[in-house]
Image 1: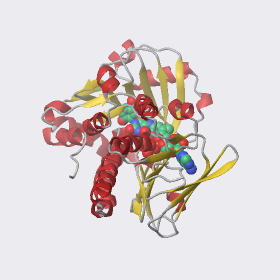
Image 2 (image 1 turned 90 degrees about the vertical axis):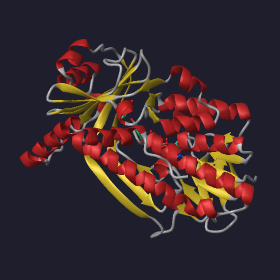
Image 3 (image 1 turned 90 degrees about the horizontal axis):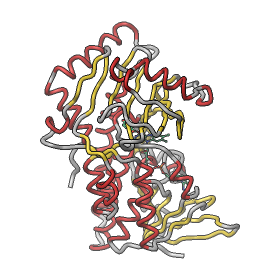
Image 4 (image 1 turned 180 degrees about the horizontal axis):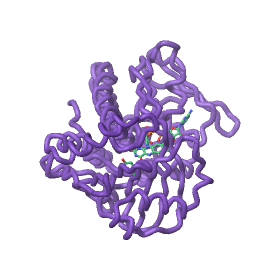
Length: 392
Ligand code: FAS
Ligand code: PHB
């Protein structure tokens, strides 16, 4: 079998890249180790930058997003029992974010790929990549007991943090930068109306909390928990009680609770692999970097990488040039590191750390007080949250 591009992974990165390449007439195959149902069952991101929305429009999958997505011009920060609105649209000349779950983005991309008749191999086993340091790389996988081989021009490693592509690189070829946070996020999804029409990020002595949503009838809530917590130890009632203890009086009194339809604990880490390109292999999305979800950047960074990678591949197939592919990694990383910094800063400011101490706690409180009292500081938060500009 032959394809111009072999994409490993059918998460948002792989599916979005596949769709953009297909619309440019480039033949790409996607290999995914799980079933499509399994991929859709993951409950993850919820907030899209305008740049990600624009890219989904470019991919021809923005119809439902514009019909059902919720456009937000601000967020609230809650500390000392008081809520402070950050007017992001007012501070950024009218920029917004759109609340639309990653599950729905993935579903729209899967539907578009199926309608286009583009090839995705689900439940592909033992995917391996070879020869990406040559001009004729090869991908092998097993399916229904048979081994298959794909000859291609490029391999796109869109296989997430635990994927095979980054792990296939020779020792010393990639430098890792990592910080693991001493807590996780316990998240719940419930078919209850959101407690507020915008997101509320909470810094409370008992820990961080976040009030988010998927629609006007489906809410997504998180509370910070110690790393050794087990989700089976958290009944719905225990979750709702803990969340209410961290909310301001008005939100605690008005929140609508109900049975969870999903509940899970996600660990938090910052991670970057440099560089993101090795010969004919390019990494994109979580395969190359992970951010704590406090800044709502994970999915948006995946879209950012795919924006640059799709343009580089399209340019190559149109002109034969390798210039954009040669520039891919550095261009991605300049934007990745700014999102990693913002996500680290939001996490440091909004969570309770076990070893902060009294001085560290005063600094955190002062950071929050300065932030909501300074137009310059609030503008900095706003321009990062709505998404920094792309390099073109
Ligand atoms: P993904 O991990 O989504 O997709 C990679 C795909 O590759 C998967 O389908 C996997 O099955 C497949 N794969 C892996 N190894 C393979 C192999 N060897 N062969 C073939 N296929 C293989 N971001 C936010 O902005 N907000 C959030 O609230 C948020 N919450 C998150 C919660 C969790 C538990 C996790 C893990 C992530 C969360 N994220 C969040 C980040 C998340 O949204 C990612 O940024 C996003 O899924 C990145 O998409 P991909 O790069 O496609 O990686
Ligand atoms: C979510 O809705 O899942 C969400 C929103 C904002 C974040 C993190 C997660 O910063």
